[in-house]
Figure 1 (tube, rainbow, N blue to C red):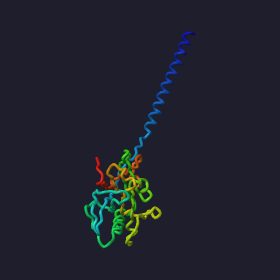
Figure 2 (figure 1 turned 90 degrees about the horizontal axis):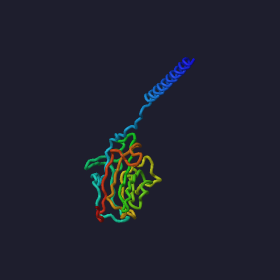
Figure 3 (figure 1 turned 30 degrees about the vertical axis):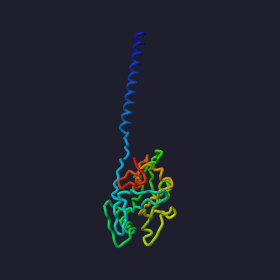
Figure 4 (figure 1 turned 135 degrees about the vertical axis):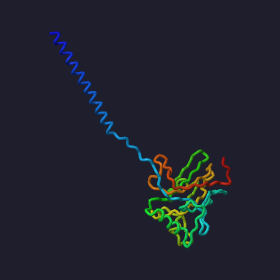
Length: 235
């Protein structure tokens, strides 16, 4: 009787052990299947294939000369300088038989027929208190953010190609057809609070050309130059 009872206990232990091993094996098999089905989805790497060249130019009649920067006395509430925008990196661009606004319009349509790319600007500088400012400008409304430091005025010379005089672009008239053909900088009321040289950049962009965290332009279609005040010494 005791012998039979002992054999029965051993049999139960063996069955439970087998079941436990089977259960563990099933769990391992299930995990393996889940791992096989789980795919690692990687974020697509950002690549900018923008073919447009762009730069700042100084205009003299029918000749555009590549702007390398500006250095001169800068006084509060006085204009600093104006730059034309054009789609080239050449030292000199010549055109004839048309006004600059029309030449700008024709060239931009030729290199950007689907109107995929737009024009933007960036102003970058440091303040006396250590604050760094990086201001993206996409139209009149975005010129107001740091207006006390640097006043920015945008112009559309295509729209006013037949006008002898015209003013800067106002927000109420800004739309998808507006062309920002030139930019003027004026020293704001707090310009002397700027401790560094000012970096002015022009760029062309589409929807994925800005860093998701910093909102800084990360594309390749850009041109930058320095604005420095000869009344000031920079360390």
